[in-house]
Length: 247
Ligand SMILES: Nc1ncnc2c1ncn2[C@@H]1O[C@H](COP(=O)(O)OP(=O)(O)OP(=O)(O)O)[C@@H](O)[C@H]1O
Image (cartoon, rainbow, N blue to C red; front, side, top):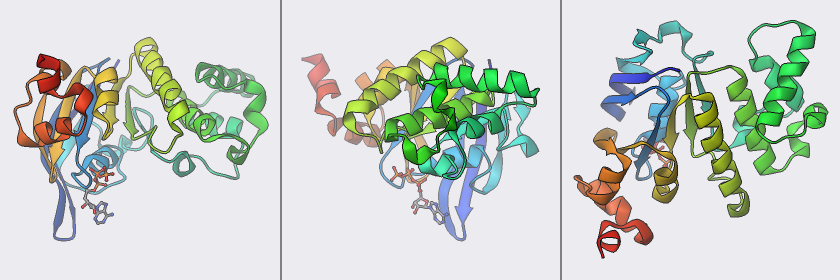
């Protein structure tokens, strides 16, 4: 079990500040939903944690220790919206998962690959296929298996169901929730869909123009939003607007 702590994270692209002075704690074994309008800096923050966006100032701590040069390796894994971004089209599904495993012998490796594929509901016999032979939902499951094979303490899921057909979105989200509870990793779950965030998250953090404007327990933030941005986001989801819940 691991915790993720961001202290004063700032990301600048030239003179543009995409993320400004963000402090956030994702306690071990819990899920934080990160929401905000388009361009508010959610993805940039997630990328910064794994070293894919340049941190101008601030610190990323895992279990209280500076992630430093370990960024992008084992302890924190990121799964993107588009599984094509996380899977090499020339690599078989099995090789993609095997590559993420900590070093083990050959026999243990194939057992482990099969275990992680089974964990995400993919028949291990499909390990010999390349990603183009899979559906979008199956590809995203493989991307998840690959991320989990690295045995991360923290998983960052960036809009992981947005590119999927609505009919398979629910299955992938249910799987993610089950895996998080079973394996106990901390998760930063980035989404513009508040209904989904509510389903998965213990706390919700809200971003606006690069800043974290509100953060608190899911129920409190969604029932009694303190910031105008949160209220605007909620207004776009009529079924869980505070007014409707109160009535
Ligand atoms: N590599 C980059 N170079 C310059 N600007 C960038 C870069 N990446 C992101 N930005 C800018 O940073 C801002 C935040 O982008 P980001 O993708 O983090 O937003 P987001 O909240 O994830 O949005 P969405 O929900 O639409 O994906 C945007 O204005 C974007 O144009």
